[in-house]
Amino acid sequence: METDLTVKLEQIKKKCLNCQKCDLCKTRTNIVFSDGVPNNKLMLIGEAPGYWEDKKGIPFVGRAGQLLDKIFECVGFSRNKDVYICNTVKCRPPENRNPLPDEKEACREYLDEQIKILNPKIILLCGGVAVQSILGDVGGITKVRGKWFNGSEYGLENTKIMPIFHPAYLLRNDSREKGSPKWLMWQDIKEIKKEYDKL
Ligand code: URA
Image 1 (cartoon, rainbow, N blue to C red):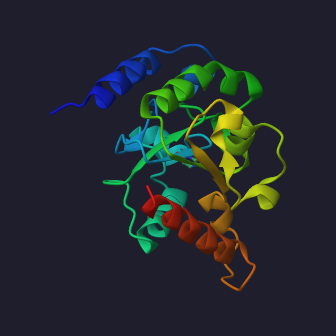
Image 2 (image 1 turned 60 degrees about the horizontal axis):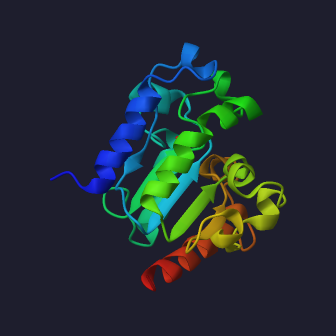
């Protein structure tokens, strides 16, 4: 049975399917709107679709996405039952470059609607682009990852926000030694699970 949430999200998705607000519409194969389960607990916002996401119309399905799934699985999360996943922009930037400010601006209303409809208790900002979009200039990802930000300071009442490393960055940094990006991600995902379990 369709829930109220899914009906509302479908309406936003329909708007995206016809969207021509920025030039990314000219090069996209598919809109990449979301994956996972619409729920009011855990939402992850990534940067932008890459090659495979654009081909399949699903976020985080390439190598980085597979690593993200493994990280979730380590603490018992699964995208099929616990997490709603989307990106700051819904269309792939050519050559996987970072989305431009006007592209993020054009797509922002869709992301804002997704957040408003779900009203999640926890938002994970995956990588620097997502952090900049939601929190503004709070510092680089290395400085802010693993920190909780109070959503009420960003217009999101009752939401806790945590920046985390992007899995693509972890793929480039293989070490698991204490203090390495992978080790830090492990600390962060454990902290996220701890907070999630209190909900
Ligand atoms: N990287 C992202 O930030 N989002 C995706 O959907 C895929 C890769």
